[in-house]
Length: 223
Image (tube, rainbow, N blue to C red):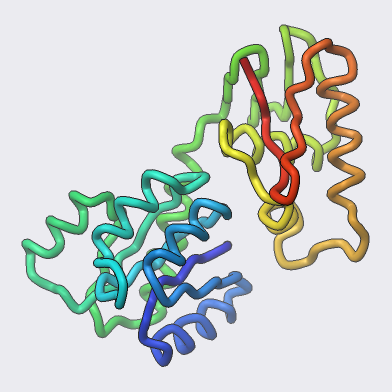
């Protein structure tokens, strides 16, 4: 899993990051709320771990902003010393998916992250319809204008991530991480797969929907 950890206490961040890394999870650490919001807008995360006491913006505001701008609407687990019932109500009202008070057992963080990620995955639509483009995740099938589009397994994964991000672009870095996780290829394999995907998805049609966004990545452009 890819985790965004938003925590200004460097000691806690380091300890939690190291513990989560033992489970082969990738952890990106943001010290400030604005930084977390920007990263959530540019990248896809499976879970966001969010401290409420941040130096620049209150964590509740960060939670609301991430829910608005994040590419894939990741579940948010709040980690905070605010333990009153009213604090929890405010957290859930601002979009939090779960709430854990400090001090916490790091093993419980792992359990809650796993549960949130599974729930989020199950809630994703098995069938995505974007205008003339239809993706069936259960059957790994794609049609455009009711015509079958033959893709490789990786080609389908790339297209699926682009469809989930639509209408926003998705960065090359995020695509590589989502497709190959923590074992990216040594060569620029993404470029080759994008080329093959473009041939299958766009070449038989007059309108090109797979767009390259300079210095960013790729986006689906659908009317």
